[in-house]
Length: 503
Image 1 (spheres, rainbow, N blue to C red):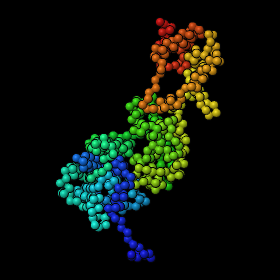
Image 2: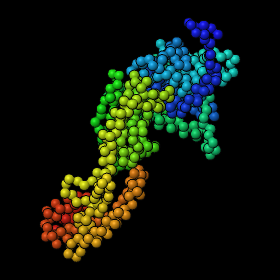
Image 3: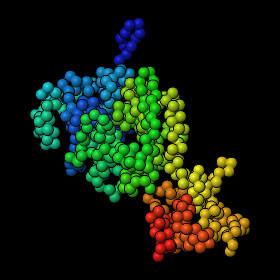
């Protein structure tokens, strides 16, 4: 025991082997761990980031090589120190993607037992290594990282290739994970090597999503090229920027403590407004329903995706709504950003504003599905009508539509009440719930049960009836039918009218 000021204190240095074992279980996945390392590369202003991985006969390794500014020896030592030398509450540079000073170590050691970092700066190369097994065997409780000799590292074939690439550039860094774990699961049918490759494929998809604003930047920013084993990573923009039918709603800015949060809502197109391939791609692996909501970006890097923060429920009618929220790193303390930078929760003042945003845009998302069901201000005669009575919606066949009239009218063309009542019973038996499931199933296409020949014959009979019984000429019939919802194109309608009058 010793005295410090006016208090008796005792130094309780943690056992490095035990603490690191605990930190390895902090909750990183391969995807989030990789993203944390890439954050460092982007902060170092790298323009090219290459992820290399090999199964290596059951002793897999992975490396992240960048051409950023690199680190001199003293900076590398600080980077490898747990906690670093910067407090999480200190103000960072506006472009800095770091936060806690733990990412490089905890992210890496969550995936491997041996972490090696080699960096080049001012034409000087330095290296440092954490080895979990070495610490476990060491008798001392000192936090001792290994300083490997560069020439010794070159004796390893994989590291030699990385060092050769580092030699060719002016500066850069590579992070090497060895003694990787976690690729042998209880699935006996799956070979570990296949699991390893599948995990890398998922990681590539995660990176394409998380860093899409760097891979394919906006305005005058330079792109950051990323690849997995030489295969370029393509950006995945969750807001469908390349799809013309996408709608960009009015944005708004929330100012807190002098910092600005920009909120930009989007309405993705209905599947009828885009190609099936585009629709499925932008839906993402989890589908539209799960991917709706807020997308939180910190310094252009995606942190959280597809959540309404429990401000509203995820529904089928709002599944096309996605809202981009850009926050600066100066507000990290308010957003409860976690160590893995995979979770964040907005402060109450922001939640209140976001709830207003949901209220403002909700109808825009629903309108995509309900527009055809509404009564329009025009005099168009629809086959189906949507009736709202005391907040309850009903869908009924419109007795004023020519096709329906032919069913409910008598021989003189008068509407028969009994037949109208029967029609309403039939309309009420429409399988709403089944239709709802089919209409919102991205893999289901709903088609007309009527054959093309049947449709053409029905419309042709209607044209003859208007000409014969109502005495209407060609122009009058065309105007009348253009205001009537019919299951065929305008060109097909014109052809049938001309055929009636001139053939």
